Image (cartoon, rainbow, N blue to C red; front, side, top):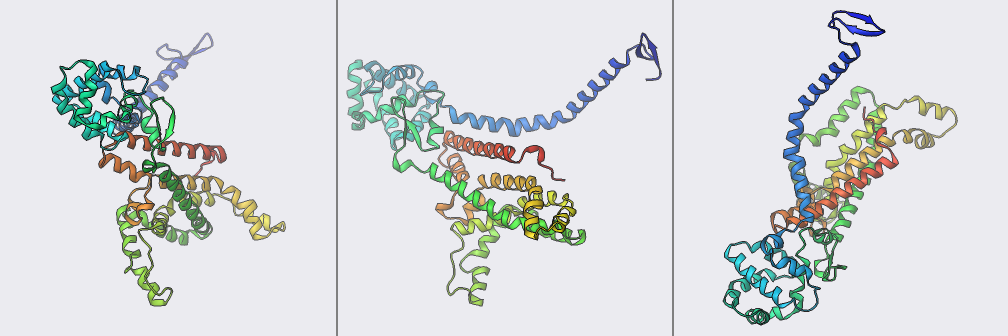
Length: 421
């Protein structure tokens, strides 16, 4: 702006545009340029991170197999009350469509979905779809007998019920399965069979391990952070480097190192036998102890660093004032110093707990069968059993637990109090 003039108490620029409008345009252009600068990063995150996760989570409530493969039979099954056998025309439609789907190689998704309810259902469907083609000319009222002639299991009404429960394209089937529940033919939520009840146990195990690791990291991280915050800078920097050493190697290498150290003939057992701490090698891996040791070693910096950052900003004269007023060192620490550390303590506990919830490599390598956490079963359902719906439902549970922890932190400490510098 080269010059301004005052016309009617309105500041004008040299080109006759009011100054207020000119400033608004400049501010708008600044925002446009800022958005243009972050747009590539946002688009990259949207394509490679946000969209895939959203797509995965939708799998937990979607089951399009029946609607896409059996479009004529699906509404008939939905109209059926689920008692006894389906109507004759429904059975006949089912026969025609599974025969056609097999011919088109489209029956796999339906067979796989039914196999989740009853083991062996997939082979039954594939066998029936192959042989039922010879009976399609029969009257509708004879089609049930044709199914039974192919395989006697069709005489059991328990094999017809899952056909109805699997038909809705939007379903809570996988979400309920993730907490060991399902719906019967009447739509009531019931517990799954005893041989399928594993996920609630795994969920509590995941929470238990995460809480225990968080508590240990807090008990170890608090004195470390206090020491770093109170030492002279030259000494605290050296200790800080030692604390950050785990970050300089990959997670897999660190976990494998513990596997070597803690094995029966490893360095820890050899040292204990040499100094006489125990008389025979201890089982330090393939159990919960190994999981705790490895996870605490990896996650301890995530607890100590936020607390150190907050403690570094606390005025040391507060403690001295409390001591001068007659408080004991312990009382001064608990009543004056520690309350000022709450933002760092909350941030550290939140980070460690959330990271612990999703741990996979460490429990898989140093833990036993009873030490695997929820992430192990997500990977197993994704890569081995190809049950993407259940894997997505278990992921939803992990995400929900993370959000609950964040809301608890915000309620107790407050996000605004999170000051790491």
